[in-house]
Image (cartoon, rainbow, N blue to C red):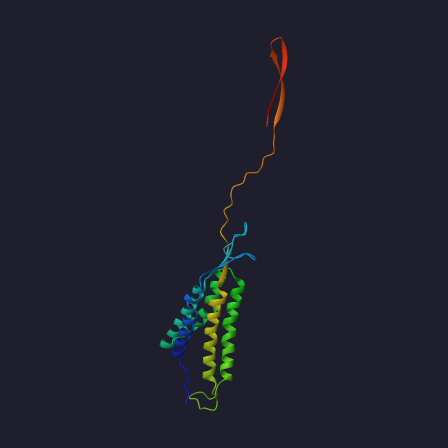
Amino acid sequence: MKMTPSPKHLAVMLFLTVGISASPAAAAETRTIEPDGVAPGTLAGAAPAGRLSWYGYQTFSADVTAIALLWMAAEKDSDPAAYGTIGVYLLGAPTVHAVHRRPGATVGSVALRVFLPFLGSVLGAASADCSVQVVNDENCDFGGKIVGFVVGAAAAMIIDSAALAWERKAPPAAERPATRAASSPTGSMSLAPVPIRDGAGLLFSGRF
């Protein structure tokens, strides 16, 4: 006899799946990207190395909030907490991407969070074993749908944090030695009569 998983058990499973797989320790916070065609550790003239920065811990924090709201909804049978779970799950991480001015990642995050749970639900229903009687499940696939939905949602959170939450930081302004523009010579010459003993002469003077 199979039992349909309760919301409390689903919240625990979702939290453990996301927490283990998307831990901030699983990914470095920064990556140094060398310019094309330049070996690491070498200088490439005035082109400094670019840098990718990971902010997945921020999207992960939003997802942890959604999981906490799901737990509260299961414990207290709270409709506001349930609606909050849906809102934070769908909009929390995408808002983080939007704040980082990454519209592509924002759209991708929303797409992941809608498509993967739906796909997981379909696969879960397809894999249900209807040869075994299921309590309170006349269609015998409801439990599979729920488990697939949770797995899909967890996968969306993990992919979002691990793959989408990278942004390119502008390299610091390279310190360049001060250069003086070569000044073109602007010399001047002059001739001036100069009285000398028993006559006069010309004095040649110049500035270069």
